[in-house]
Image 1 (tube, rainbow, N blue to C red):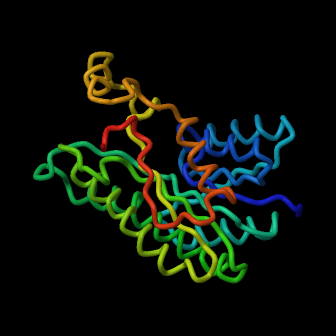
Image 2: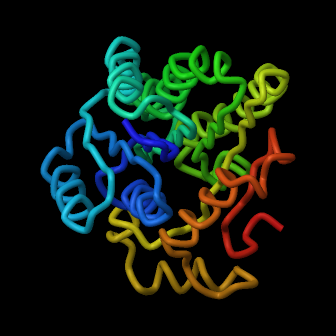
Image 3: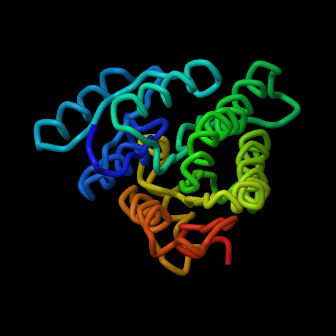
Length: 246
């Protein structure tokens, strides 16, 4: 146990989640790298950060499983003494016409992207309420704001995260807890690696800032919301999207 603040980042084995975990480690936090299926990536990240002297552990938990999430939080508190920041980053993408989408795919997207966030929030809230402090930061998407053709279910799940953020901010605020949301635009991640140069250029040509974003820019925004500088900000959704949703 130490006197550092502690953060749990879900879906932190790669992409945006991994960069968020790295940023928090570099700021001196105890970091819990949550993963589900990407064990190799998570353990490599944990090992790399630990070798550089950072306080980091990796923990496997499926966010759709309430008991696994509760165990992760209990073990984090046992090891580090608290959970000061919880970043709900775990999510999956899905593309397809709504009338061709199978029930399994609908359930999977909603369970991971929305119910997973709900599971994590309700599991960590008792601890944060007891401490009269805490920061919950949810990762949504610009498509949760504006909707995306052929991504109706995904857009609905991410819009749900925004609605949850607003409602929970009102519910948890009297206990000293802030709840905010980030809606990334097109970010340079593995999830977008399949896009062609032409597709990327077509998308970025519509942006005031004519490029795709970086994972570091999302992580920097998360760090700001976790900091004391953001203590009077709650219930907000910040679009980090190069101006797409203006």
